[in-house]
Image 1 (cartoon, rainbow, N blue to C red):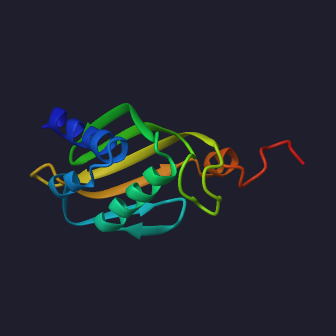
Image 2: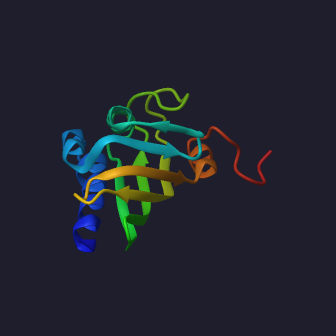
Length: 144
């Protein structure tokens, strides 16, 4: 089942984030799915994940999530990802539309899955400082 779980997690990167096909979440996520967002200290559900993906793809039409590494042990998958994109569309996180800002942000996801291979929980950690700096919302270290 290890290989199958890795493929299912990659589908979230490829089909959901990269292609915008949020309908596949119905197949990949268990009922009651919960996502924990460390940077925001809050949780979301599958519907909120789908809305986040749609909004982020409108702001970053070239959005790409690339899986760097995956480890499965027991009922847990951990993966290291890189998110890239150019802010060419809608307003995002307080930015006006189409600033041209580029993102290249490391992320770590920890998934818990059920015996059917559907994801029940996801803990997401991304470099919030890198996001804010690259989008021009925070000054880079060493700049006045």
